[in-house]
Amino acid sequence: MATTGKTVPDQQFLHRTQSALAMQRKICAQPEETAERVLCDILAVSRDTGFGREHGLGRVRTRQEWQRAVPIRRYDELAPYVERQLAGERRVLTIDDPYAFLRTSGSTGRAKLVPTTEHWRRAYRGPALYAQWGLYFEQIGAERLTGDEVLDLSWEPAPAQHHQHGFPVYGITERPVPDDPEDWNPPWRSESWFPRDAEASTMAGLLYRKLLRLADRGLRLIVSVNPSKIVLLAESLRENGERLVRELHDGCRTPADPALARRLAAAFDRADGRPLLTDLWPRLSLLVCWNSASAALYRPWLSRLAPGVATLPFSTTGTEGIVTLPVDDHPSAGPLAVDQGHFEFVPWDELDDGRPLPADTPTLGYDELETGADYRLVMSQANGLYRYDVGDVYRVVGSVGATPRLEFLGRAGFQSSFTGEKLTESDIHTAVIRVLGSGSVDHPHFSGIPVWGTPPHYLVAIEWADAYRTLNTQDTARRIDATLQEVNVEYADKRRSGRLRPLQIVPLAPGAFRTIAERRFRQGTAGAQIKHHWLQKDSAFLDTLRELGLVRARPTER
Image 1 (cartoon, rainbow, N blue to C red):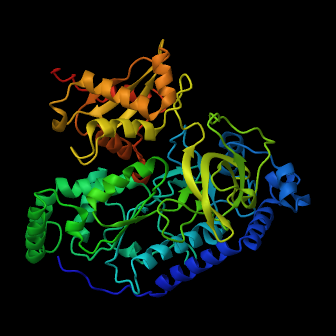
Image 2: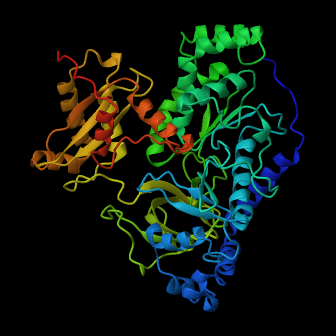
Image 3: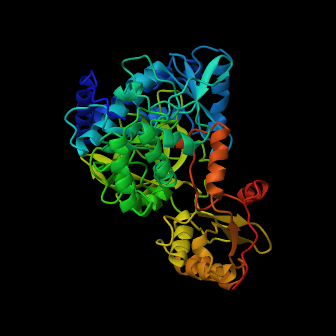
């Protein structure tokens, strides 16, 4: 399969990303004027609306007046306004009515619908993406784009599959390609590998098609929101290396390229049949994905799948809006994107169980935050989500110019705590990795499950691969339990006092977590929104494992 070698006709795209990045850095140095402009814009789009009249926004001019006029709300309290928009009422939350609604993944409950307007896309989301990609192109030293440098896994454009009351509804990572030149319009939108392949019914199949179509490219950059998608790409390569070589040689789905097939066969042989991403793309130099909170646990995994390749964070972004934008080579945190919304912060501590903030909770501005402190976010965006209690927690890890640098820690209440043990995903991950070791397989597939009882306890569901065939499950459970007590002193205290029963292991069939991910994909969840959790919220996950027949008979104890 010969490379196209074509030059992307619009080289202005690269210049536009560089200009957007330069502007973002300028804003970080002097954020005050931008922060004031954003609040004024939010007031401008909200005053002459149903929401604005209900809250007296015609009289609001300052940040303090905004806080007094608008209570802090969770999504379920904002939902009635969204439902009025869906019912066809005009000017409910914004003066420019939404043209579509973005559907969240529903990871914290039922899916939410976030209104999206042309103004919000043009003035906020679009420019942010140009700035973000400007950093990535700068990091790989791109001076021109030929269409060979990028594999963009952060977006799977597809025609809107769902409508509600006449409005298209889709996920932020699967939105259709826009016609608006002011919106985010990357040049690879016309590449054959970019859109979701209608013939691919699984995530693994979708990613294999991308491998096949990009095998001849001098790829330098892979960008994903979720690191698990990069891992799945690498696993697809390992599982289908021989097939890839054969199809490239024979030209089954692409023009035959025997020379490329021979080169890859030799590289894969040197890798003992377990090719790495760098075996396929020797010029690969940068991976981009979330690198904080539980996503940080993927770092050792990524370094084994693409050795020597640098990593940078994707913006801290959700369906509701963008919070941080990377502007330098910090591995996990970015400056607050003060040009994306009006942000307020509430000091956070571990006693916060994630319950909704009271409507009149005092808040701090971005310029009142302290380095090393943790805060819960309240966000206002020009899409109509005003003083929205996001539920996310950030730590201030420094600053960029006069703008705080924030690292995402997780959601308020993201710990599991029956009796005050406050277990985290990192605790479970650390304990299991210490016991099983990180070298026996690419990365153990497992997850902790809290199980209520008298007293309660934790299960660890582990894909019981051949690498563990010499292990005794009961002894392994004891070792993980002991290690978890070393990692978390509160867990140790609750175990010693008998308030928690000993940890147990649930052996799973190999590929169990892939099966669950593929099931969600078939049910319509975008690949970028399918996340692996090393600690579940409750025991419902165990029911799913049993329903799908993924719990295997306990191996014979030795």
